[in-house]
Image 1 (cartoon, rainbow, N blue to C red):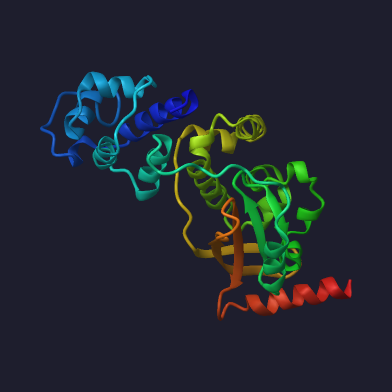
Image 2: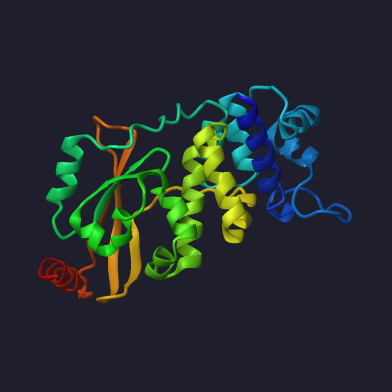
Length: 278
């Protein structure tokens, strides 16, 4: 592991350890605790490793835990599947994270976006740059075309663009979801200058981002219903999907489809008519 990954692993393990209720682990009752969660020696005992070795792990020392040890720590610390996968990637057991590709999508991916018609869709790089989109997405979020390509990062827009904040139906929940998914995806590349620069800018610009980043929380994407509040047509209920082209693995294609029975399809059609008429 490189130094950045070791530091991230150390901080992440500490943050998870503090969240585990000792009563849920089967350990005998102990004395008063100065800090919440498990002690280091308790994590070591439950995971089948030495207390000294686990302490070194939380200190960010240059040691290389096996897959078996990582799995044991995940069980002890009650990690979610997303958190377990995150630690596997940090320790080199989850496959390499894709490098951020070029800022333009291949022609066939753009044609796919365009073919989705009324469904807002865009293509996202591994570093979360919005690299391409269709007309429906530009009608949903007109500002995407006005933002310079160098600043068209989805996470940055979520935390710094007032128009995006107003568009998201539940900004506190939605922004946190974006942040935890971003961290899960880039955790193994935290030393990448592009990621360092983005995180530094957002920590300076947004107290909400700063607090969320300090939590070390991670999550993985799941398709679900999202609510948007559009200034022209009102509430839109859209199901959020994410696909990876087999021949462009560094890209994610994000598609929003209208939730049946919500009136959203008609509102999207009205929005398209307004754009064409205007």
